[in-house]
Length: 253
Image (cartoon, rainbow, N blue to C red):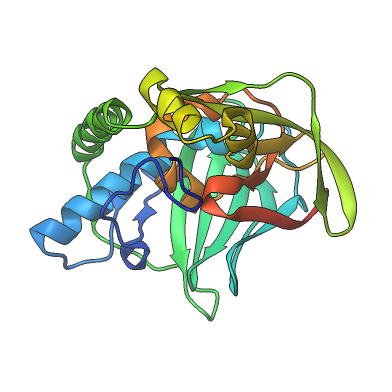
């Protein structure tokens, strides 16, 4: 059975070692690192670099923001804080860390990033080559395939109609993705007397076009095996029920 809170894939990556890139486009990590730590950071960097088009909307403007609650007391906040000629700066707060990302929204590319300390200073770091990032992303894609092969879910599909999800006392009309279970898993559920359609509803990922598309890195890390499923569904994320990740506030600039 698909259990609440069970992610399709979990990678052995620690958020405490997140990363920066330089103005030249080379990826950076805080050093010095062991070979194992470097590998973990490069995997994360590859995900950040290659999922910009999944996470951010092309219509973002300064002042757009979202805040999510992942677990009790754990909040994730993303905000568009500045615009310059090359793109917009997005601030992302999570797990006691803050990142600033410069994103070219027209081409959906990450131009710069920096880890920001409590005083607001951006930290420099030694470079990791683009070749390493490319190799890491190939490995992530291989892990995606392995995870899907062993999953009770074959794919995620956009459902028909909409569902109202309440955020801060206001109902939002949401489109959604439903999981498609393997035939074997469906038969197991039916044999156990469980309602497959109800389980699908309890596992939905909901989106709303009224919400800025600023999708947290934590979601991408937890859902990397199926990340391509979210790329074409419009709007910002409102709720990911299997991860207990829910929008608690948002605003438009």
